[in-house]
Amino acid sequence: MAKLSQQHMLPKNVLSYHEKDTYRIFVGSWNVGGVSPPDNLDIQDWLISSQSNNNPASDIFVFGLQEIVPLNAGNVLGYENGKISQKWNSLFRAALNKKLAEDKVVGVGDLKKVYPLKDIDHNQVEEFQCIIHKQMVGVYISVWVRSHLLPYINHPSVSCVACGLLGCLGNKVYIYKSLCNVIWLGDLNYRIHLPDYITWSLVEKKEWSVLLENDELKMELMKGHVFQGWNEGEINFPPTYKYNPNSEVYFGCDHKRKPQKLRAPAWCDRIIWCGKGLKQDQYNRGESRLSDHRPVRAIFAAEVDVCKGFESFQSF
Image 1 (cartoon, rainbow, N blue to C red):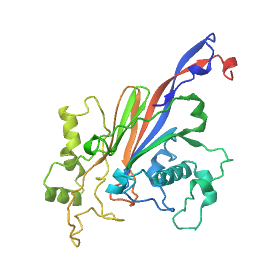
Image 2: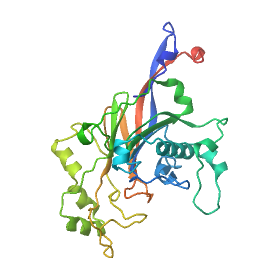
Image 3: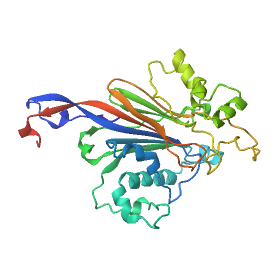
Image 4: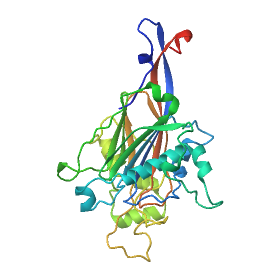
C-alpha cells in the first residue's frame, strides 16, 4: 500500500492547510500466456492511451501480469525464476522513460528494440521509478511513480496470498490499494453465459452489447452476488480472449483450423474498483499479439488530501 502525503515533511508547529490534488493512475492487466517477451516487444500500444496529447499523462503506473512463466509442474512446484520478471520490469522502465530508450533504438521502420535494464544509463534522471514489484509463481505486479512524488510515498508494501491449487499456489489476480481506494485487476476468468456456437456467431457479427448482456461478471454484479459495492467501467472493446497465436482471429472462429479444445471468446481480463474519490476516465485494451489474451488498461483520477504549509516553509 502506498500513501501520498506531505504532512510528515512539516514540523508540528508549522501552520498548514489542506488541499485536494488529483493524480492520474494507469492500471494495466495482461495474461501473457507463459510467453517470454522478445527484445523488440513494443508495449507503447498498451500505454498510449495515457500518454496521448488529448489526455494528461499518468502519475502512477500499476502493471499486473499473469502467467509470466508456463504453468507447468517445474515452475509451479520448483524455485521461482526471477529472470523473466526482471525482463518485464526492464521493458516497463524503458517504455515509461521513453526518452532514455530513444537513444537505444535500432532499425528505421522496424519494430523498436528495447534494450535490457543493464544497458540504460543510470546517471540520467529517470522520469519514472519503480517503488515496488513482486512475483508469485506466474503472477507479477510492478508499481511505478513519477520521480518527484517519491518523497511523499510512505511504506509501500506487497502481501502475497496463495489462493491457487491446494491453497498454496499463486493465482491470476491482484489487488492494488491506495489510501481508501482498492483496485482489483487480473484474469478473472469470467465467461459469456451462452452456448459456444451462439457466442462465436455474435462475435463474428461484432454484437458486443448482446454478448455483454450475458457476461457472467456483469450478471453477478447486477444481482449483487459478488463484489458488492464495486464498480466497473463501460466496456466498449472486443473480448480479450482467446486468440490464435500471433493473430487477430479468435480461437475457434477460423474454420480452417480444428483446435483440440475450443474456447469461446470472453472478457476474461478485467479491472474493477471501489472507494471514494476515485473516478475512472478510460477503460480499453491494447492490441499486442504476444499471447492469446489482449492487455487491458484503465485510467483513474484519484483525489488526494495534501497538507501544505506556508510558502516560506515549503523547502523545510
